[in-house]
Image 1 (cartoon, one colour):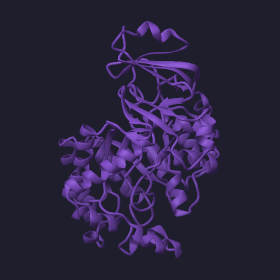
Image 2 (tube, rainbow, N blue to C red; image 1 turned 30 degrees about the vertical axis):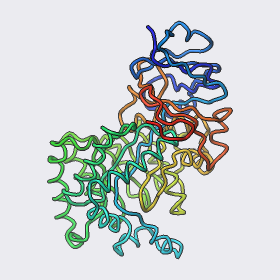
Image 3 (cartoon, rainbow, N blue to C red; image 1 turned 180 degrees about the horizontal axis):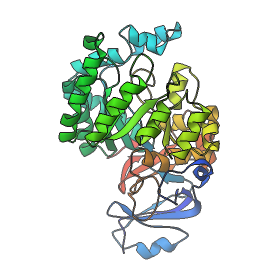
Image 4 (cartoon, one colour; image 1 turned 180 degrees about the vertical axis):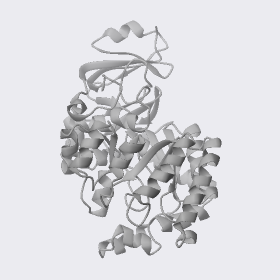
Length: 420
């Protein structure tokens, strides 16, 4: 079979070849690195991966041949927890943070999420679309080719749908693939501040409408003190499951309420944050092969404790890493910085880090059969990094190491510049 594209003589080709499932514990170190490797692409899919000069058998006069000499290649990075679509920003809250105001205190005062809710409700579809597109472009230049995008800044049907419709439109028009998540249970809107049960009823009423319009794959809940209790979260997610949603949960971010155990009990796809989870939780998460989606840049920005990734991996958990990009607790689109933080602050090895943003990231959005590794049959999503080896990608922090990004076999970032 002749090819459309061949990347040849790649110095270090990190394939992540292996079982297309969550890699747990020591399995997270199994990344397969091929020296002098090549990747052959036809119709947006990978048809061969090997080393040396065997790629010549797949060439004809229409094949685009690109040299990977001097570069590291990985699968396209996967950011599996973002709040991509939102109005405005919250730099006005920086001083409150510096003065020691707690995240939940700011929320109680009508700031935080509720601040963004006001701005998102006021923003037009086009305004939200252009803002989210700009962020997606930044993510793409940092090597991200697949993104999960949550709603949760509407807290009413009209605006929640508007956020999800923006995500759906971007999935059609932008190179990045987007998986939408309905997060109506993100906070209690001001109009329901004295009647949480009535708002929960509104969330339940939104579920069939959003599912019927095919606006979201997942339903998520912010299970946290002063937001949604374990019992309320279980009820909302149980109703979502009845309507065919897959489940996610913001679990044990600030207080150890038992969100991790709830994720295991209800069969969630992932449990996210987990900064306050305990070793007893780690045992359950490992036993249930739960995707433990960690967000170290949020800890960095809030100056809070980091999730205990090293302990979790040693207990046999499977870790994914995400940016948690949002306008309040984590205003960054830089997944490479997240990768570097996970090593510096959470003691993850470079091989574990790259697994967490590729194969395990794919598992976090149920896409492990299509993306997350460079293998025959998978989408031709990959990144060329201008670094000498995998360790250097993690070691040299705070800058963008990307040279080129390919999505479905098409060059979409060239020398760090958008070119789609």
